[in-house]
Image 1 (cartoon, helix red, strand yellow):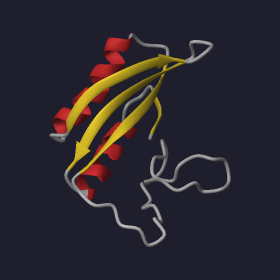
Image 2: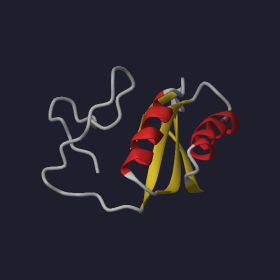
Image 3: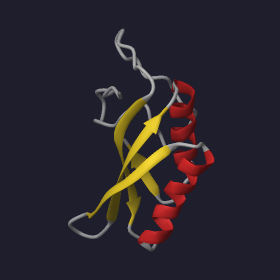
Image 4: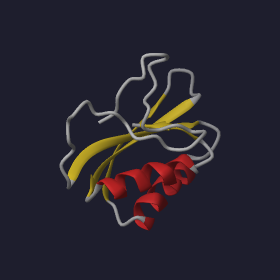
Length: 111
């Protein structure tokens, strides 16, 4: 779903700063509805419940079906990743989800 931009290994679909840019999918089409595992990596400066609530509030706001799957803490405890199974009904809903996730203060990236 995302394409490596070749410069630093980060996805073009999710950028913390700046406007959203469409991803060149090299002629491939994404068919909706689509279900996939979304991993959100957060800084470890807040309680897990607060971080999870920020993510879930985006899903609820956009009426996205989701299931919490997993939590992992980085080796040094600097970051915590939360994995959710999400189902998106349209490309527009996908873009809105990433736009809303970008507004979460402690979110480093989501993929």
